[in-house]
Length: 161
Ligand code: UDP
Image 1: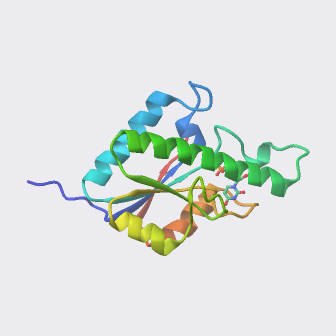
Image 2 (image 1 turned 120 degrees about the vertical axis):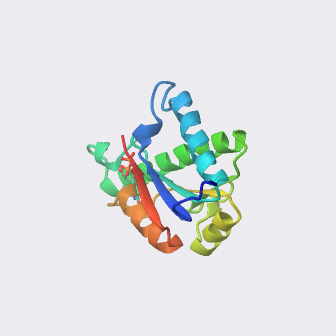
C-alpha cells in the first residue's frame, strides 16, 4: 500500500537549541539529520514551512542591561543566521529551500509575503521563516502561530530543545 501523507501543509518549529552547539553555534550532524527528515517529508508531497528560533545564539531575555527592543532585534537576527545555515544545508541535500524575512534584508532573503510563501510551498520548496514576526517583545512561539494562520497550515509541529 502506498504511503499517503497525513497532512498537506505543515509548519515545523525548531528551537535554536535543536540545532546547537557541538560545532560552535551549530551541531552539523544534527543539522544534517534534521534536513534529511525535512527532505523526506517534502518528498512525500507534504508542503513544509519552518520557523527557527535563536536560543543557540541569543534571546532577548539574555540581554541584561540592553534595551529590550534592541535585544529582541538581536534575537531576530539570530533566527536569520539559523535560517541561512538551514537553507544552505537543505540545498546541499537536494531540497529546494527559500528564506523569507519580514525585515528588509533583500540580498540575504526574500521579503516575507504570505501569498509568495504559499506559492513556494505549492511548488515543493521548503520555506524558512526568518526574523520572527519582525516585532520585539514576542518570541518565535508567537511567530509560529501567526505564520501558521497566514499560510493556512494543517498542523504546527513543535520540535523544542
Ligand atoms: N524575537 C522577537 N520577535 C519575534 C521572534 C523572536 O523579538 O517575533 C526575538 C526574541 O528576543 C527571542 C529571540 O528572537 O528571544 C529568539 O527567539 P526564541 O527565543 O523564540 O528562540 P528559541 O527559544 O525558539 O530558540
